[in-house]
Length: 141
Ligand code: UDP
Ligand code: MG
Image (cartoon, rainbow, N blue to C red; front, top):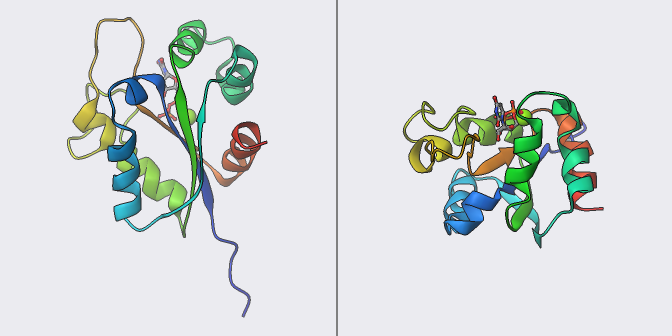
């Protein structure tokens, strides 16, 4: 029997997460659940790279604010691997809106509405194997 290719996910510590010194906390939660850190890089992406990353949201009302938010400071990018790592890490992250994300999740425990008019939620996690592959090639070219 052939082993299935281990799934991978791109995780970003967004500028608010880095600014608030939550990088280690977020990665610790992912590592403690058992996923394996495969790659790691501190980055200051230009607008072009962010536009590529968030191409699916281009044209939505929140898109310009999202790019402003994502370019407001450094980002830490990482790749983790493991069986069903995408479902597992997205579950650790919690719902997109940190105000109502469940307690115990990263966004629920550390995020809130800061009155910026933007949805600042500390962490990005790929939502499918296809997006993971696409996003990993953007951040780890
Ligand atoms: N976002 C926003 N307003 C919205 C929806 C999303 O500002 O109404 C931002 C938020 O930072 C979110 C990102 O856009 O994390 C990507 O949105 P998506 O729906 O893919 O959520 P995620 O996969 O990050 O939970
Ligand atoms: Mg998404």
